[in-house]
Structures are given as structure tokens and as C-alpha cells.
Length: 287
Image (spheres, helix red, strand yellow):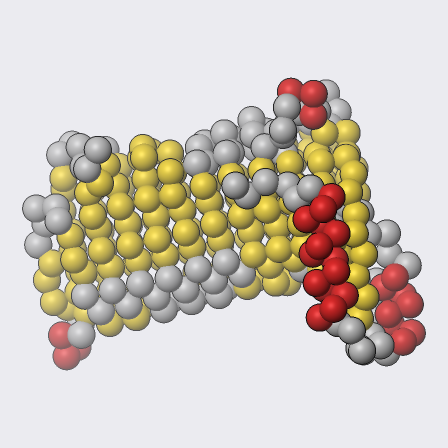
């Protein structure tokens, strides 16, 4: 599940992309795979993506735990034949180099559109990163991000795209301008903010803080039944439902909003839930 595509899957994806773009003279696809060595001095990995759909998983074995492995495809869209020629000259694989300002950070980049070329280049595929190394993901334009099996702190920022986190630990901080969040089997802190999009989070174990905030969308937060929570939930337009012994009160002009504030147990975990337009539910998960 959520594994790096094998060669057959990559070839099939390329064939589908080629079929989809058939007859369009300004589009092209290319497959790529490879591995970027992680030096002994590296303590953090930063992944910089211009556009793409990124699946981040853990190494298949200890033998590949000292590299960032990748496999997938690159889609190129240009507005002219000349632009497509320029995009084709961009190497399709990922590149990596130490951050000049901090050599303990390995900066890995997906292909990017050359300056002065009108069009788009996007990487779509899987990347395997050691689970114990902190990871920053920056999608500068549009892109969906999936992360599985993380064991260190992770940050994800995309201008527009969906977020999916599975069995992640060590804390996750993320933002998206427009996209859906799904997190399940989560352990530890979770801080996700979106301008537009629904959110679903299922915790196996909570940390010190849960913050889920969306400009427009419904929030569903499922937490362990036996935990202690300091709850602050607010819907400017919408309703709040909870199975905890907490009171939901009507707020705002016209009574269109709702708020819940209170403590469950020792209140060890701060739970902050916000939506400008949408409903909120805070549900205890029973083991």
C-alpha cells in the first residue's frame, strides 16, 4: 500500500499518459528512476517540488536506507513546439545536493520548468526516504502529497493539493491552499491548516497538540477514548457534535455558528478545531 511503483506500473502509467496526450503536439512524458546518496553528515532532508503527485514511503530494506530512491514519470506541457523542446532538455530524474547554508540538510529537487518557458513540468511517482530523518516537503505550485510510515518530524506545504498521512509519528505540520486532509493510524502531534477543504483525522495515539483549521470544509477528529483533552472548537457557520461530556453552544450573529470549550480528563492534549464554514465532530475512538 502506497509503495514505490515497480517498473511495470511505471510503464503502464507512462502508456496511459501517452494515450491521454496523443494528438497534442505540445505534450510529452518521460519515465525516470534512480537513487541519491545520503551522506553521513545529513540530518534532515528537504524535498522541493514544482508540480506533482508525490508518494513518500520508507526504504524497502536496510540495504537502501542510505539513499533517497525514486521512480515515476515526468509530464511536460508547453504552449509551443519550442517550449516543449526546452522542457525535454530538462533531465527527468531527481537531483540532490547539500544546502550551501547548512550541509547537514540534503536538498532533493524534482524537475523544474526552465526560466522563460511557458508551460508546466510535473513529477508523478514514489520517493523512498529513511523514516528516522526529519523531512520537509515544499510543493511550490500544485501537488498532492502522501506520506506513509514516517518516524521523525515532517513538514509539508503545498499551494494546492490533497494531503494523506498514514501511520506517521514524530509530529506532522502541513498547509494547503485548497485540498482534502486524510490522516489515519496517526501517532503524536498534528497541525494542518487549509484555506479550503474537508479534514478527517484518526488518531491511534495523541501528542501534545492537535490543530485542524480550514476556511471552508467539514472537520472530523477521532481521538482515543481514554485521553485527556483541552478542547477549543469553533465553527463560524456550522454545527459541532461531540460524544464527550462537553457542551456545544450557539454563537455568532444570527446563531449560525457553534463553539465548544472545555476539558476532558487531565487536559494534556490541546485540541484546536476551526472552520469558517462547515461542521465539526470530535469523536472518542473505542479500542
